[in-house]
Length: 290
Image 1 (tube, rainbow, N blue to C red):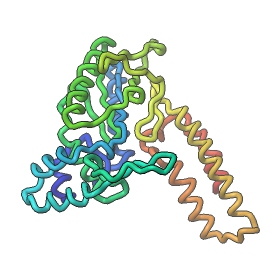
Image 2 (cartoon, rainbow, N blue to C red; image 1 turned 120 degrees about the horizontal axis):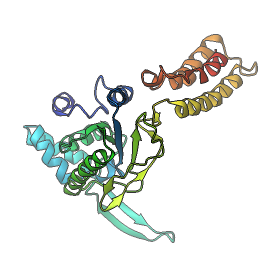
Image 3 (cartoon, helix red, strand yellow; image 1 turned 180 degrees about the vertical axis):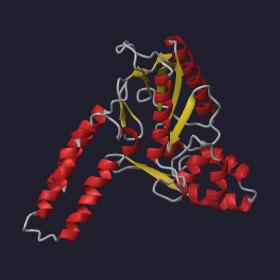
Image 4 (tube, rainbow, N blue to C red; image 1 turned 90 degrees about the horizontal axis):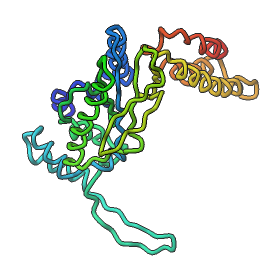
């Protein structure tokens, strides 16, 4: 089923797909933002937060989408039996129970099917003027223009389109965690983006994170690398304890621990920020690890 589904999934969805990684997706997003820098445009972004994304998948909805994908109804029935054959009970603080009830939404997190079914369920996101970048349940839309009002208007229109899709398929957007951000090299550093959704203006943040890489307005990555340096320092403290004579750890163990703890953490998202002028911040920590 994964092979069949992968051929039908849109290019903007990169999560849980063979040959696609989080670093690939954020690199594509950054590449388009940097193109707007070259064109002297401002890029606005909305980072959409799906509340309990896996838990809100509508069973009837995913059944309909599976039937479009798979020609075998018996296979679809078997898949939905594995997903929907669950129940829950509510127990209060004094020990009283409310009995068992069947679960009509959600897929079991941690299962092999869950991410694949989520990709299938959201594979028909509506077309938008803005470009979409999805990694699992992290969705970002961006639009570049030379005029602030054009950026804000396009993003507001696209959020309305996504809002209608959300209502149809019973997904939930967190209005408090769905935020807007802006990327540009102009002097208007304090200009905040005003994107409307559900008659409210989305909160604006000066530094966003997608996925796991902190992005500032001019894409210097300084805050990301400062945070990474602190994380690496704490990991090196663990290595120092492991290297203490009391543990009797050999060179092979120390080398493996360094690769797993320090290098894997330090290299995450490196294709995005490796050309930053602030990469020197993490050089001393890596040297300490070695």
